[in-house]
Amino acid sequence: MFGNRMISDLKRDLYNDLSFPANDDSLFFNYSTPLAHFRGEICWLRPQEICSLPRLFSDDHHEWQVKQGMLGDCWFLCACAALQKSKYLLAKVIPPGQPSWGDEDYRGCFTCRIWQFGHWVEVTIDDRLPCIGGKLCFSQCQTEDVFWLPLLEKAYAKVHGSYEHLWAGQVADALVDLTGGLAERWALKDLARNTEKERASKVLEKTVFRSLMNLKEKCVMSCSVFSSRQGTSELGEFHAFIVVDMQDLSKVSRKDIVLLRIRNPWGRRCWKGPWREG
Image (cartoon, rainbow, N blue to C red; front, side, top):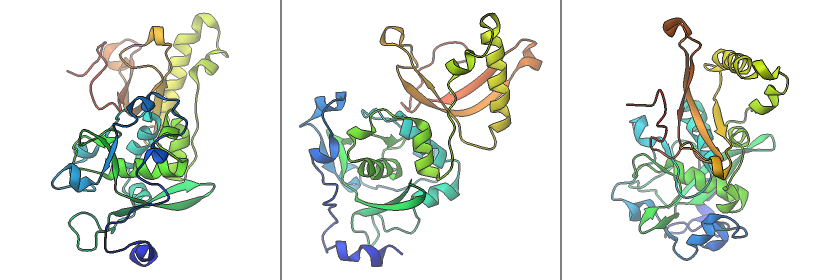
């Protein structure tokens, strides 16, 4: 399926993508983000140079959960997590059957599909990935020898022009690009304006949670926090999360307790407040 289309671009040596080269042009846009501090430190390595036995996927889903690196693209990674819930979507975005490491036909390239302007666009990249000190410096899976995520991130960066272009964005936009579906964004601050001030918090909480409970089995959900630098908590400043589950504990606790279970793309436990894990 892919061999005939890419054979003209491939030589006996491993494929080098000249349209998205392994240099600063692919990393940076205008050096306006904290990523610019690492200019000159980043090198490009293929997966087999990073670990001994690279894999595209793992049979253990925990091993290929998303983990954010030093790039501020949590919004994109939240959308990537949606692919873990659907084999259909995953196969749509990363078509199966592509030669990978250890295969005789492996040539150092992969093709992903990104939804753009109403149709799926195939994006072919080489598998050279940004590293610092021999390790991936941007996104990676929980187990570092699983590479579907950093390869997809590279394809998405290519679509946008550079990795730095991915610094900050809306989860809704990435969800559309990776599913071909529709996304809706709710700003709780806007909803609160339509509620009496003295009842705003309780009414808003119940209304939103009731709507989310009705949707949780029908769609992918994420949430975001926007805190000033002075008010930044353990949840971070301008950060997005994956909604894993939600529960209404009112009947059990006899109190109005509703909970969202969220996963942090940072890949570590950060919340230290009530109902924390452990």
